[in-house]
Image (cartoon, rainbow, N blue to C red; front, side, top):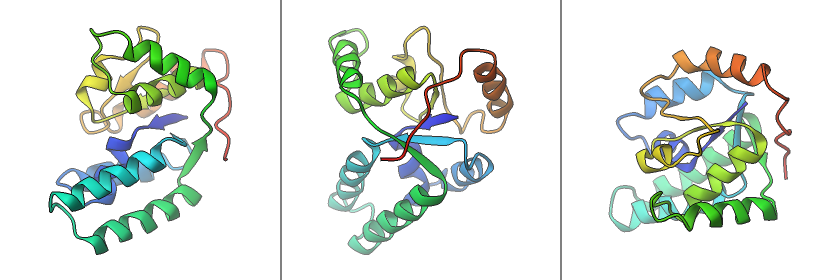
Length: 165
C-alpha cells in the first residue's frame, strides 16, 4: 500500500505533459493506492488555482472533479485523518529547515502513521521526509519501486489499514 499526495493526482487529472506516465503507474498499482482525506480539499484548491491562472477552463475543472470521484471509488482507498496526524504535521512545520507547507506535512504525517511510503512530485516534500520514511517520485522510478516497496512493507510490522471514510 502506498500513499499518493495531491501533486500526483492533479497531474493525472489535468492532462499535464507527465499525465500519461502517472496514469499508467496508477493503473498498474490500483488497489494498492491510498490517499488521505486531506487530498479532496487540497485537490479542489489546486484545480481552482489552475482555473484562476488560465491553465484549465471551468469545464475541465468540473471534469477533473468527476474523474477523481470515479477514481476514489475504484482506484484509491481513503485514509481518515486523526488528531495525531495534525500534531505530527505541526511538529514538521515547526522545523524551519524543512520548509514544509502544512498540507504537505499533513500528507507526510498520515503516511508515517500508516507506515506507508509517499509518492509525490513535490521535491521539497520528498526532501523533508522523516528519516524513518521513504518518499519517491513515480516519474523517475514508476515501476522499479513497486516490487521493492511491497517487499519492504511485508518485512515489517503490518501497516495500520487505510479505511474509507
